[in-house]
Amino acid sequence: MIEFNYLTDFRCENESNLKDWILNIINSEGREEGDIIYIFCDDKYLHKLNIEFLNHDTLTDIISFDYGMDKQINGEIYISIERVLENSVDFKTKFEDELHRVMIHGILHFCGYKDKSDNEEKLMRKKEDESLQKLSEID
Image (cartoon, rainbow, N blue to C red):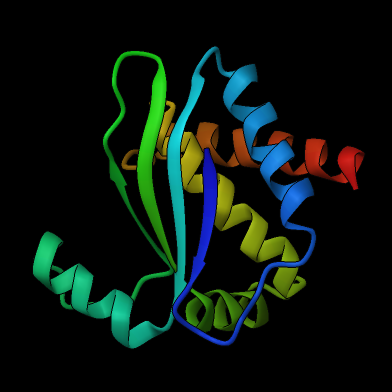
């Protein structure tokens, strides 16, 4: 089950399409859908989590907690809408595109992709781009 929760006034448009897209990406990676919870929040909330759980005193756009078992994807993905909006301005992209990139970024982490090294980051960007292309085919 893919669930969207909101701790801010923001709401995703076309939740059903987004859930179908996320499930499609999970399946294309040879994984199974478990319990995936998205929590859309503000900078203050995500900053608190970043300090409490990761000991990072910085702002971030996403934090994910992976509870996966074998091939089943289970986890929580926290996304700061404020950070995504600011990043969309900085990267000169549409807010929705940046939001979708961040949303699938968390799923790709759950599928085993990392982004610590240059090579890992290149592969992650490639997988994000491929995933975003699949979303455009659903819309």
